[in-house]
Image 1 (cartoon, rainbow, N blue to C red):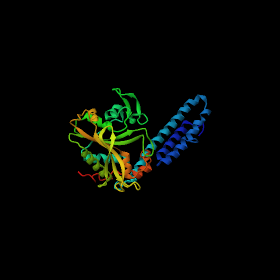
Image 2 (image 1 turned 60 degrees about the vertical axis):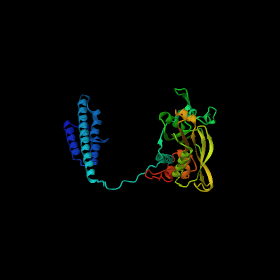
Image 3 (image 1 turned 30 degrees about the vertical axis):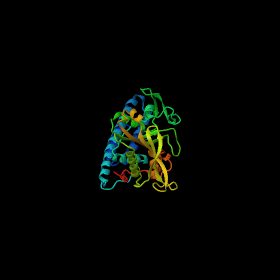
Image 4 (image 1 turned 90 degrees about the horizontal axis):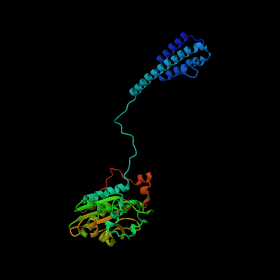
Length: 363
């Protein structure tokens, strides 16, 4: 058709195109009709291109008629497309089947990080001894972190080359620090609860140190037991039972050496037997320092609001990374925090891989 096409010609083109649209049985046929009518070289497009040759007095009516033709064909194509798409979907749903009895496709499983697993074991073992878990903030004031623990102002641990100090002060006027140990939780526990007490405080701690065996952020667990008749024998029995249960060695050699900590008196370092050459625990005749402990200093009890003449107790603390490395033969601290998925797959633990935590407990 050209510019001389009559209204009857346009009506005939409309009827033929709409009939072709209605006869389409699939989307491919419908697309062919659309291209033939509305494509770059389609019949309707060709008529629209001839509007310039139409006399000016007839151009408006002619343009309106062509636009109406185009809109009618476009609407018919879209309506037919929806019908065909619905039919295609129904056919696909009718043809496809899913066997819900088949097992699912295998997918990667997450593993428990060695640090998280070690904390779980520590909590389980001390929980069996009657300890509960206490928590505190990572940002502490220097009184709770140092002063209440009988650490004097001139102590090296309070210097900024070892401790991260933060800007600003607390409402009480104390300096803010990233806690260097979880011992402040012991003070918070004493201030918040009347004795007797039996708590452990696992958590993150921070010190300005970083190498193969030190990290600026690491984990510790502190323990505190307060009662009227607590003795050094209770401390020794608790520590020995824990170490033998944690490492799974019922006859693990354990010794206590006199030492000094500002917050305990008397104070003791705790060593376990190991083989210096092979790294085997419990054998070899050598000794390896594992944690610090002692009877709570009277000044610490008073700082916690407890009368040291009526109550006494013991405390201990250890690095969680350190005992995890010893138990699982890990020689470098840094991979704990590098998020290397290969390392995590090699050292992580399945959620259902539950270790026996009762081994070595004497009751």
